[in-house]
Image 1 (cartoon, rainbow, N blue to C red):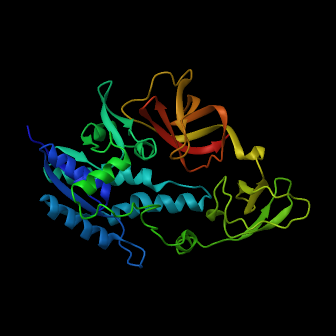
Image 2: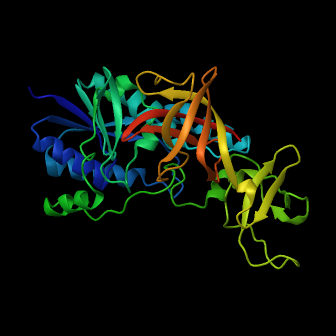
Image 3: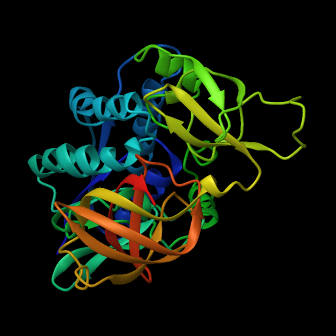
Length: 359
């Protein structure tokens, strides 16, 4: 039976190849292009992306729909992003964008278009496990995007297909070239969608006033001045402008802490103990399908505290009120509050939570 598949078409190579593959399978493919950011400041590529999406749809002879979710994005993603930076944390808006927009309001819109299934160009795989929609890693370890999809509900995943899940990025590019897609050589987008190629500090300063302060070692020695705690993340090495201090060698300096009460950035040289965490406490736990068994006594699984990190062995226990305690088998470097810890059982993504405190 032919199914109507509503594909999120960004105007990039990945979603274009996803559309091509779905059509090859005989589906009734409709493309839906989202506008999530409207500021016309010279950095936003939304207009060009829409034109590229139109070219792809004309070439593949599939209908193109266009929806503006800019208000929902600002309310449900961008405000959270700013609030986390005000708290001195390092948020990841892509996770919320997937949950709230691409698999939230986008999914609702797709149903109004008569969609039976939702599709995107993510490098991940969906399926069923224990009677629930489930998420699995993509075949390409360098492109697997399950980390960013861990907060999507099992219900949504049960109605979603990822046509690129079993492909390598190089294979996707080759398909685009072989089939003569007009955007086959378009560069991949990088970074946070609403910031684009603009300088990050310049962007953030338009929303949150910078508040410079001292930069000190853990022992309290003044090493310089930071430009605002919001501009730095734990483990950061670049942009500290520390050098030439008597008594210190050539080892690199890292951000190892933030003293919010005193507006002080804590920096240390080399592999300082403050760079490493044996565990963490996470909040707002989100499980795909249902919470895994064993949280009461300690669930053995693996975890990532950042995208593309190798899986790390850990034990996860419930701490009540959607809180989790995570103890790692090996100390983890540069764990940043505000980021997400995401849990896996082999290739299956179990869910994740927001990193709150380090231990």
